[in-house]
Image (tube, rainbow, N blue to C red; front, side, top):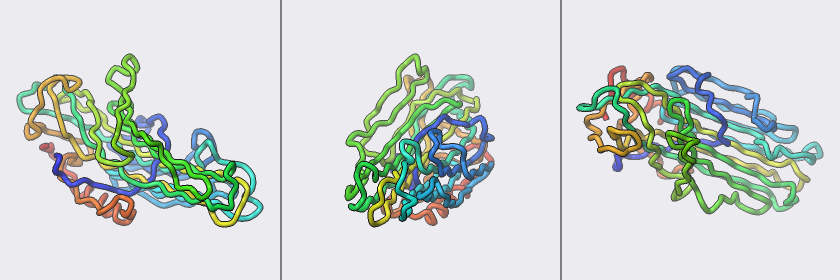
Length: 331
């Protein structure tokens, strides 16, 4: 697995909210684009869901008078590409109010599948566990001209990646940045993956340091029962906020691009919590309701995540989609 070329997409992320997996048919993919100034970021202006991917669109709407939100979402099983952008309008009408602390605009991509794992020599009904890899890639870009008053002309970019197993949130990575006039969008110096143990909240959540906001991360462990299907879901959220403070010269804007790619299993154990012995991945069989091969070698990544285009992402998503099979899949 370690030598596998990573799949990287460009997308945008929004602050995490509770999963609505129950409303999305398994298997299924969904995108949601929300220009909004309400605390919950709802209602969505546009959304779509399907039992097959890739699906996606680009939508531009007025998030609030003087603020235009543009969102792009492309989603397929195992892959999500999101873009969220807010632009400030010039003129007297844009000199009052804020959309902070709520997002001016959000973009969401979600996929959910039903997975069954079996292994040679392991009886069905045995509790096991697995870890997997998730690629998180993207960028923040923000611009506030020097002529804007700092107390009112600030912008925010956020992304969140979430993993849900059997309807329970198990992992989350969330990163944000902040920019004022003549400053870049600054990120915090420390990044963490928040892991929710199997018996959360009896056991507290764990903060696991990450090397940076983007990369290929091991996630898990997640318990499952050999031979029994379980739901697996990955949500990506993109969020952008820009205050509409006192107008100077130039046009403030903030953009968040986020990409999520499920890289497949890296470890399977024959007991809960990775406490038993590692199973050879060659002995593990994975069947999915979507027919997607989660562990086949992905396509090569672009030279840099920030340089990837959404057009290129659509091609990648299409190639992933072509890998679907109707028979059980060997790791």
